[in-house]
Length: 261
Image 1 (cartoon, rainbow, N blue to C red):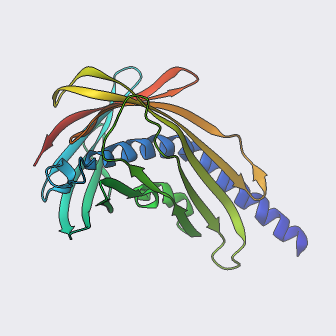
Image 2 (cartoon, rainbow, N blue to C red):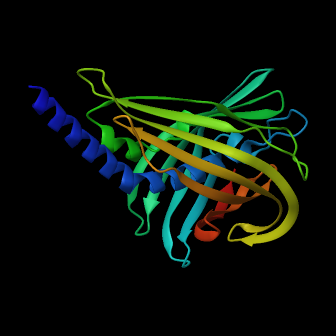
């Protein structure tokens, strides 16, 4: 009996590690893109109105490329509802992710809120459902901070860090199988730069941040995955270009293709 349990645990560990090996970088990069897209909700002087993705039926689209400038896909976002009160505005955004051939791969909804001149984004609402397919027969719990984006940006400004955790357990026994912890740190606002993207020409703040993902499976710590990111952010519009690096080498980038409201 004990031998069977040991073999089963080794088999589960093999499946989890194999899934993570193929999914971990994809999840991290996709997470980056999703976080960046959420940022158009920047509010000025505690005003939520007038910003693209806080307006009903507003649309926002990103094109994703690899380091060799090859199109890898696109992400389309549309605001499906906006609810406002004197102290808070909350929007529901429907996202659709397409591959490089234009085939829809996944879609889903998430919400963001604007309160006291800041945008609050629940990090767990940004997880791509495709990532969870590796754990479809397991119990998954997610929890994380709300990413806080202040009402104005200034060169040299340090933005708040964020942490997000995914715990995977066996459905029948409740035994912990793996835990994934993502930390976003070093979020610092740089100088403004002029930048051209398919959606137009902008004057954007350059923002740097570090992302680290640590995974523990069946009590074993896996090597951490670390990525450095650079984004070009325009208040009132959001991210117009983003770049992902590992060890100083470009991995991928995204550009704003179109935005409308």
